[in-house]
Length: 231
Image 1: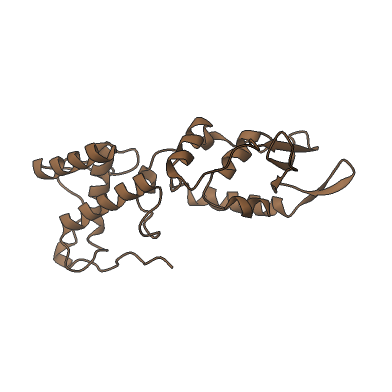
Image 2: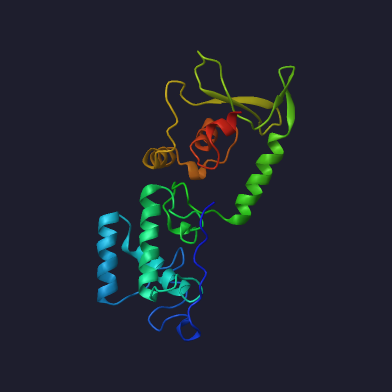
């Protein structure tokens, strides 16, 4: 089980909200990024250069760390130290593809498209899970036999594609979608290869379950293993 994030609040006198330099919302997903003095900006600029992450994003993470200190930090750490620690955690998540602490999800909205920990709307994610779960329990008839919908399976050796899945077309009839190169392995545990694949196939916009692209993108997610999808 992952360790919980620190939950020690700052003393009442140190519970600061907002800043005279920065307006509310500057650290939001679409915000322009807060302004800081020379020392902080220089430190963040060095980290941006070495990590390849934009300075604006690191400024947002730092600002969130400053704010979070009031309600959640580790005893013995100062506000700036806590904020910079959050920046370091974000850089690790960004570059490695996974967080050191799985409870750290507060800055997932700042991750690039295609990153395995990129946050989605909790409402949309919950609806997608329910929708998929219901559909996987449905059975339909395909060429005179009962088949399970929305459940990928491995095709026999010698097939031109690696996987198949039965889905309902927009017309309401059951079709089989075939996808995946049988001569290539799915190396989605490699963050760079996963990121590259999802970017090439524009997986963030893959929503049509009747297309091979949709199911190929599903296989390159981290939500389930390939064996979970096909067992």
